[in-house]
Structure formats: structure tokens, C-alpha cells
Amino acid sequence: MVEASAYTDKVMEHFFNPRNVGEIEDPDGVGRVGNPVCGDVMKMEIKVKDGRIADIKFMTFGCGAAIATSSIVTEMVKGKTLEEAMAVDNRQVASALGGLPPAKLHCSNLAADALHKAIEDYRSRAKPAG
Ligand code: FES
Image (cartoon, rainbow, N blue to C red; front, side, top):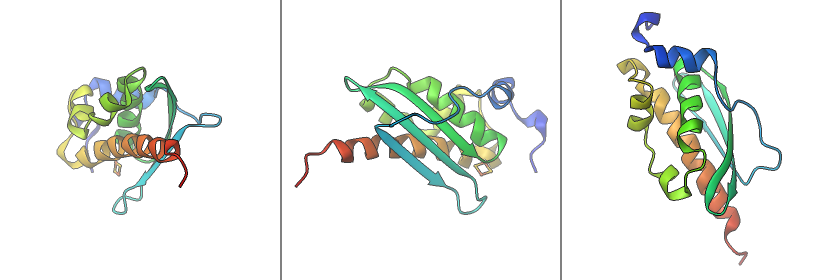
């Protein structure tokens, strides 16, 4: 169990007011990830325009840190190129929140992985058939 005081104000703020929650109609890429240990699941959907993330939304069934990391990831990559978004890793996600308690670092993996999977899904769809 992690005490609430172990979380930064920024984590709490994103937990209470998560940005970009929901689903995108007709998304260009979808990333779904789950953590088998804690059972938390996350889905991230993107809309791509001119090689950039034009829109991104998430749904997270998980802990507060998972919700806060999902939320901040969407803010970090909106408007970025796919290459820039692919380069965002879990450490950057955690540090954008002012850090996470060590026991909660895996939650930031989930957010980065969901983002990367959504981009990979977009890229696999964009490949010409055959
Ligand atoms: Fe599993 Fe946070 S406890 S993602």
C-alpha cells in the first residue's frame, strides 16, 4: 500500500482531473495493454494527421498512478510526430509527473506501452496490403 502523501501534487491533479479520457470515433491506431500482476488495463486510441498525433484519448481501468500517467502521456504527445511519441519512455512519463513512488513505477510502463502499441497498430494498418 502506498500512502497518498507519496504522490506529487501533479500526480494527484491528473488523477482527479484526467485529460483526454474517452474514445475516439474511428481511431487510426489502438493500443491495449494490461499488467498481469495488478490486473490493470489501459486502452489508448490515436488519430494521425500528417505524421502527427492529431488526437489521443485513453480509458484506464486501474490504479490512480495508471490514470495519472495515461493522462499526462496524452498531453505530452498531442501534436507530436509519431517518431517523437515513440521516443517517449516510462521514465519521461514519471518525471513529467514529478516522479512516482518506486512501487508505482510499473504504472508508467503501462502508459508508455499503450501509446507505443497504438502507434504500432497505426503503422501496421498503414502498410500496403500484400
Ligand atoms: Fe497496476 Fe498501477 S497498480 S498499473
